Length: 596
Image (cartoon, rainbow, N blue to C red; front, top):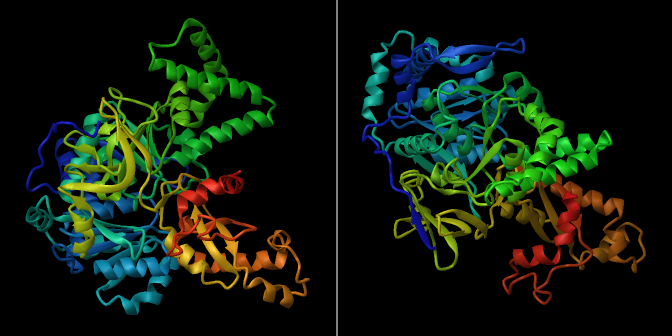
């Protein structure tokens, strides 16, 4: 099949503002617990809908008192936390546009985003971030002020607006249209600077409505979720908005190192995650079993879980498989569910490929992980597997009101109300991103007869790690190639837990290097790539390059190869550009060795 569309089940009001939900909940269900905040003692404090609306109104008045005008950009550079959400809603209520910046961004990345967006007011989390902004402030004439969450930014803004009437906020909200910009999220391109994806109130509203339509069992009052993904990432932000609109109680954490412990304390009903977390749960359980001399039991349990899930798609499991599954449920699966809090029976995976193996494993264990697909430009998910329509290994069917199509060259095209209208201040890039009203995803895909979409490859060169981080290899590769010892570089890490690089040496530079280090001229390259001094120089070049990007985008491991890539050997084009597919095929074992 080349094209598939799902009919819309909703309309988008022309005056919609995504802060509306805060005031709607406060009016209809003022005592509904919409958030849990850490109480500092290992427990949680309830935040009701009425309290949240009051907090949003207070901060919105503070923004207006601080000079934020209709359409002004306000930046947030902080980890996932309750205050992030309060400020986000307050920006919308004040008629502004949130500029979401990853808290791990480098000074150069932050400077470009703040410059390009003409951000007027910025809130950061730490003194270190504030100091970094101070170093680049001279290049940011539009930035009037930087506040710190850690130094009471929410209280400060609330105090500033205390003299204003609440009506001022609602007057601002009324001036916005559905098409007004709600957020700018900068996404890496294959070349050049990151582009600002402009998401409107209509985009975010459509994502929220569609998510709730396809996840009614999970997104409803009484359910709880622990959100740990970065709110600067569109995936976390969009699903968090849908959860809020649905009346789900949400708690926040930025500490990934103790997630299992936090799941056990909070006991979420469903979680939103990237594949890497599911991999860690699986690998952690397997390692624990092997350490306890129960590796064979775990392996058998995993095989049974996968077979059980596969059987669900093919007429159901037989008696023998049911018995095996019941035995392992007591021995293994129950412990895995406990590791996810004990209450979690559903999860949403996005930001990277989950894979059929993990999908079947978790469903067999009793946790349905619903894989979806989307980009920043599609306000997160535009396809997703649901309870009614599931095909593990696929990324699901289009959301209600959306369509998917396969172009002649195999590229996946999509359209619908979650698709953005354009890149901020970049008409040329916007025009290039669409063809006949369809957004070009840059990914290769297929659509089966039932409308399920499968991603088969990446047309563009952006890497997406298992943690869901988008990484442009060009910045890293270009910097490293500037080192005299280095000839070629290929950054890898698509679907992997971290970024790494294959490096070849410049044969013309080696004779001099050998001489300077008192090595025989006939020292073979196989010995050189193991030489501590040479490795140290390459490591130093990598460390310097890593300063250009955030920690999540930085190269964690390298593998120096004993050969160079050439046009003659097939790895380079006549223009000396990398043939990535060829390199990946020829050096697959080296890539696997990095991650093994």
